[in-house]
Amino acid sequence: MKETKIEKCINKVIHQEVVDKVKNELPMEEEIFELSDLFKVFGDTTRIKILFALWRQEMCVCDIAALLDISQSATSHQLKVLKNSKLVKFRRAGKVVYYSLSDNHVEQIFMQGLEHVRE
Figure (cartoon, one colour):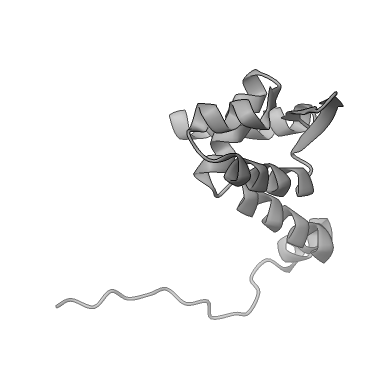
């Protein structure tokens, strides 16, 4: 078996000005943590299906559950995760609660991701 030689940096930093520039532009640690949590929410296929449905149409829990063929309690749980991540919002109309995407940013994130996987 032939060994592959792995390239190693001899110096700790080769381009200090590049490292300093990028370091100064990094988001704050708390923002990085929140962004990481946001992307974790997108890591569930049921939540992606819900986001897609809500991108197309405002819907109630019962209709989302019927669309995805899952229980209303499972749907409610996923909607709670999406709501806590500020990805969906809701409004009440009598006894019915309707869900929709929180804002255009959510649609943009969703569409950019979908466009990326379709390339």
